Image (cartoon, rainbow over the protein chains, first blue to last red):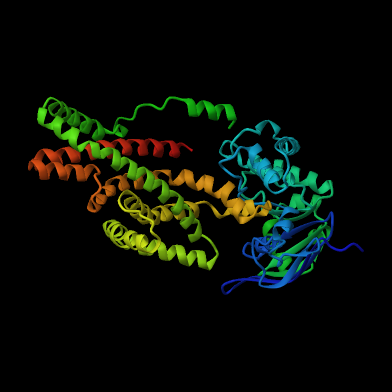
Length: 245
Length: 259
């Protein structure tokens, strides 16, 4: 690819006290690419993802998102506007309805008029398949529905990049498919996505590349075909044998 | 669960739980009724109430104004205590620690007899009397209110701020639209309790010769030497106000638990 990568992770390290969460990771993500980060828990997957929109501050190295460094604190809100983030525990605003959850940031950050942002909110809710739940509060929704509202909330900001931090691991098994289907649709539309997930069905269907992170190190960067047929390292093989049963 | 069934559940009548009835309030109300009748039929007590009750207006006015100021100042102090800015944090922490370390009575005497006269000497601004009392109470209680707000803000899950920031909101926008609306709902009960506490502490302003409820009682006693009737009436009138307010606070508490 000749185009400049939209996310450039350059020799990033991050410590929490004595624990090295991310250790000298370098990784580029190109426009339209879906990169899935896998690895054992505590391996630094979420930390690396959270560094991309500066929810965690990198200790060493740098991350350039769409030409702007996340170290540029003056421009960080502009960077975040372009990145949608979906959390493991949804983090919907409990005092607002589904529609209000999606409208608020459009109104404040994107300066859209009320009517316009409500139309976009309804559109996004329909897209994730829960258009009829627009006036429900988060506590009245199932986990899967909440996560879909959270995805709609992020999409309403027209982000260039979507980050997913274990979006299905807090969901009941029967709720997972609905959320994964929404993510698959997004990937097909060409959204640039970085996903921390162990849903191997999603990895097979949507991932362009897979990053295997262990003890904060990028052990292997590979494609789904190679990962499943011929993992490059012993550690990857070991990990896969534990999650594929 | 569908929305309709949730709504139906909320609207369902909650069966009466006999142990949750505020028996203490009922007993108190009955005792109060007996005392009330005996007082209202007694010529002496009617006279005392007429004389002492005048002070209730001042007590309520001072409390409402002081608490209003304490709420505003306390909110900002509380926000400064959760701020990353080291100057804001240091200032508000110092303020809270000092004010909570002083008895309210000392603060009131200090504002009444030190700060206000000095201020008058330097600037000609005269805050003697009522303004001094309001200032003292507000300044002291702002520290307690600040701690309540701080606790409320810190009780909101970290993910809320992270979600707001990752949508591109600034810290201030996230605080205003996401964190505070949730935090305020959670701190309503403790704020209500603080209000009741301030109503009682407002009796301390009698030391700077303001004719609040307590001061009127003391005046009555010093004129008539009827301490029994005088202080009975003072106590009764304070109880009417504080118990009434406590019931309001309980109601708010129950409402906020439903959410």
